[in-house]
Amino acid sequence: MDYDEAKENDIDIIRKDFPVTKKKIYMNCGSFAPTPLSTIKSITDFLVRCSEEGPDSSSVQEYITSLMQDLRIILGQLINCEPEEIIFTQSTTEGLNYVASGFKWKKSDIIIARGGLHEHYANYFPWLNISKKYGVKLEEIKIDKNGFFDLDKIDKIAKNKNTRLITLSHVLYNSGAIMPVEEVGKIAKRQNLLYSIDAAQSVGTINVDVKKIGCDFLAFPGFKWICGPPGIGIFYCKKESASLLTPKYIGGESAIITDEKNLVYSESPQKFQTGFRNYLGIAGLASSLKYIQRLGVNEIRKMNMKVANEIIEEIRTIPGISIFGPKDEKLRSSIVSFAIDSVSPKVMVSRLEKNGIIVAERDIVGGGKKKAVRASPHFFNTTNEVSTLVQNIKNIQNMFG
Image (cartoon, rainbow, N blue to C red):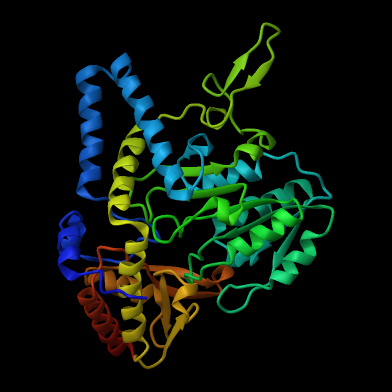
């Protein structure tokens, strides 16, 4: 890749939009990214408008409707779908649960899930719960050390007449590996299976195209790589697949009642959004998405990988260190996970935070069997911060070595 376009003076301008950069080195966007000042202002402006005009006045309600319509258009452009295929949620977890809880499962059904415990729990527990609740068979595909799997194994199970759905993450939360979602999508299409994607670690940092992936469902948060406010998420539900799901909740916004007192669901997305009131999240996410659009996802990818590659290059010289994830940068995101023999990940993360550097501890082997330190830098991070991070890692290693 050519990273020359990610110029330092551009980054200096960007960093002024993120106050955290003045005080700390924040490399934990895989958990929760900071919001730019423009997003904070958009939320404040929304509250002021509600206070001045009345939150349930016709003018504010029209404004909210317009905001939601515009946001659906922007999101549709981001992941290449129709606006009405966008459903607002509070998180990735909620979106994935729409799928898991929305079907009438039969005991003979089979769900194919990549990696089992190696998946993020948000994309494992719902399927495990269905398996336990209805007796559905959960086929957990074996993986290699980087989280990849044998496509032929999925293809073989997919041919079983009882197989109903395939689910996996687009980018792994622990190793940053980018899964072959398009290849799996071809298998799902060939066997006429439903296909669900956890895109929590991909949207906003790499290109995501639901049509190329060929998925029926895809869920992601607004508060990770998109840098939106907390409590807002997105659930993509393919138009042709929406009728297959029964919403967990029903109310006046999601259904109508006939003269015979029969309930009839509204069309998607209203069908799934009864009681939704996170309009602050809508205002904030719209602002953050415009920020992401101005930079461009391709440029963000370049900036992120410049920092990620620098981290890998510098820490690989540290004695006793293990770096997880694929070496080929085309197969990974900017997530960098590592462990040091003499210092536990928990201690390393805690010590780094005391020194003003925010990273995370995560499972690198499912079920907590092996932990790692995870750095997840974004476009506002710099190579100078990498040098500070690595020097602190060395100092902590010397302290405990």
